[in-house]
Image (cartoon, rainbow, N blue to C red; front, side, top):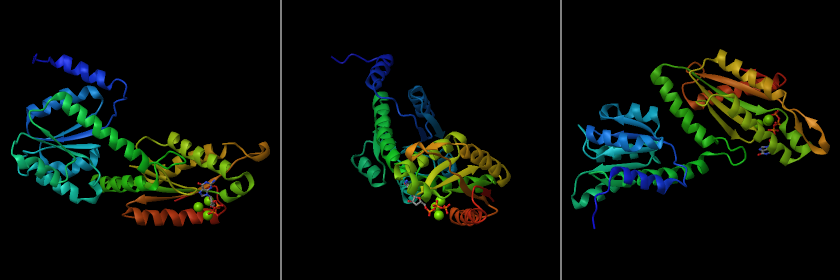
Length: 314
Ligand code: GH3
Ligand code: MG
Ligand code: MG
Ligand code: MG
């Protein structure tokens, strides 16, 4: 009745199970001191295209968490110097990591272990020894749900790029990293020029198409690691990590040159172009936090409008 199942067969059945779902790719941070367990994780999870961050020493916990910004945190119950439960509680107390899903592992069989794990704020629990397919199924399940929720709450409905909520989160994280690594970054605000006239002349739907195109081209033009978002209305924001103002101005001017050439077709097949104005502020010279960077960039944006629009100021 209980034929032993070969690992190959297990992998095959899990593969089969997931064939009709695109496996969600995400970053997993795994904290544990047990080398055999970490090896097992590596073997089980690598084929799924996850990025795996292993941490043996909880002392580097916060640095690693911030830099890897994982989609899922896996904590072993038994850790050196601190218990997994304590670590889980501390993470949960930090508002920044409030929605990070946490999966706890434990070999403990005591009845109240599971209760303690959930009280500490973990989302899921797995008993050791680890059963491969169960672990994979739980991780995929967790990531799929998280990704769906995240996509909705982080994306601007019209342009499909990041919304302000998401951008603020990302930029604040980048500022902390820049601070630690002694790097600079640039925050830029872009605002379409006389956009109200486009709406008035061609209608709101054409106006929407302009906004969509701007989002699309910004995503294309800037790097994967840059933050590109719709800040609100006809304003967009960028955060360029590791960049000084000089480079940032060049990048934005290059983009403005491309954007100026973009031709839109409005009412009665009438074609038009539209420019934007932008202000750039640099961390840490113009501001030490997002609020002051925003103010500096906004002041420059206002100045760019005053000086005749269609320009980037820093
Ligand atoms: P300025 O050069 O000074 O920025 O002039 P402007 O006309 O662009 O600025 P103003 O702030 O007067 O108008 C912004 C317009 O953007 C008004 C608003 O109706 C429009 N707008 C904001 N959000 C949307 C949107 O989602 N879709 C469309 N079509 N228009 C929008
Ligand atoms: Mg505006
Ligand atoms: Mg405007
Ligand atoms: Mg305005």
